[in-house]
Length: 177
Image 1 (cartoon, rainbow, N blue to C red):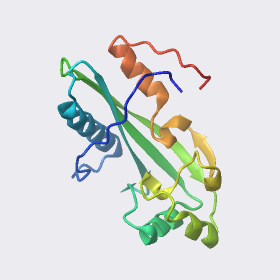
Image 2 (cartoon, rainbow, N blue to C red):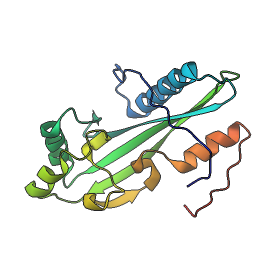
Image 3 (cartoon, rainbow, N blue to C red):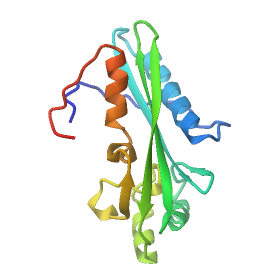
Image 4 (cartoon, rainbow, N blue to C red):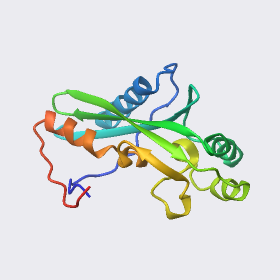
């Protein structure tokens, strides 16, 4: 959508951490992911973009579900609630080692979900924080987002563009955001 040539490289890092502050947590994990991918690159003349997203509800960080039953439990807790979605973004210049990071926050209101909706959705998004994907038509669970929609999807575009600009990279999105 941004017209940035890219290649997806899956980081191989543990997401285990003692950090409980959601803003610091997502920044830490995004930096950890960027460093891992940078170490594995053959070329040292690239920018590495990494991100990590969590949902924060009632003082608890909610990450990716471990199983379908765990996803059901997460979706039950999110049903009818207002939660915060944090995404950390890190951009690393693999040539210089310079890294800039930030975090975005969006407040998400989820409508009440029926038991059937929870059961149906539970196995679909085991790779997503909060066990749902706001961009999926079958996941019309969110009634309101305050903040960046793309943050809830998992990559806050405004934050990414600001960080890229700090590296001298100016992107003109090919599509209206």
